[in-house]
Image (cartoon, rainbow, N blue to C red; front, side):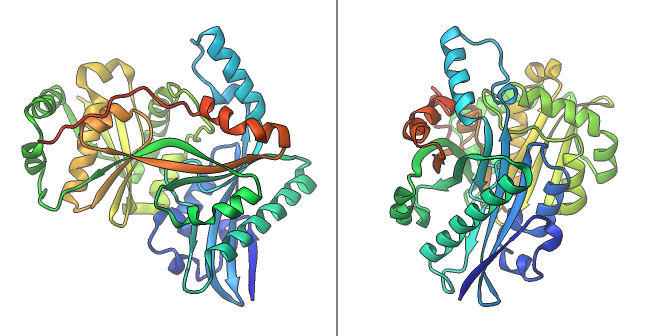
Length: 384
């Protein structure tokens, strides 16, 4: 008999949880603990266990996200027309959103089920029932109404799209989100020289120019003690980059990087860039089995252009992936053209969502396009 349980803390997760989701760091209890202890202030976490009798057959990560007008659009220099549309989108989306998935990271890291033990329709029905329970819980305990429900980030070939009938019956729209930029490491790349050899002349020269601009800096992996000691600086650099985003749904707390290093240990890496003894930038990585997941980065803007810091970070992430024999470097969203220029491919991602007010739900698909505009960017082809 299929049944489920909703947990509100990593401390409540059943002992069998980690063995069930061994394939994905983002579903495991140490990551969940790290994130819950250093979570954005506007995110509340729920964890769903789906059981067949007493056997765990499916799990889901569910977030309640409180969206505030002032936090959604951080760039202030926009036209009157853009400002009008931003206000419109903000007013429709503001309030409480239930997300099946993890809003703090690109990709499908919110669902997993054993298809030999439970069918996908049964699994989705359990999730939908749990969402209803969570809505009631939030209404009872905090007197807040859920405005939007979202299932986030599915590749086009994900089997969840076979359940379109279920989503249609509940009036969830399928909308296209910005793509996930992914670089697939070729088997013959055993060192960075092999990658460079595969570049055409234009991008090979670009690589060499960028690396020359990095020559005055030295790169160091930061240990846990250094991450803690430099937490204010790392956070300031992260904010420099975060504040340039067109649309934001959360802000990390200052202890975030330390918490991830403390709990994930060698599966979380932070690399700092130093000019003499001064930290001027960093990037972070999460090691997720065969996938190298790029995480948050930041820098002192005064040194970004002269050292081509951002581009060099992308190259350094790729180097780490090559030398440590990962199959894929997941570069996530944003800055798609520059990521394309080093060889990352844009993989479309789809989202299912609905507004709980019928009229607003009828126009939500169009509003989502305003919130998540298609960027005007040119795909690059750096390889021979």
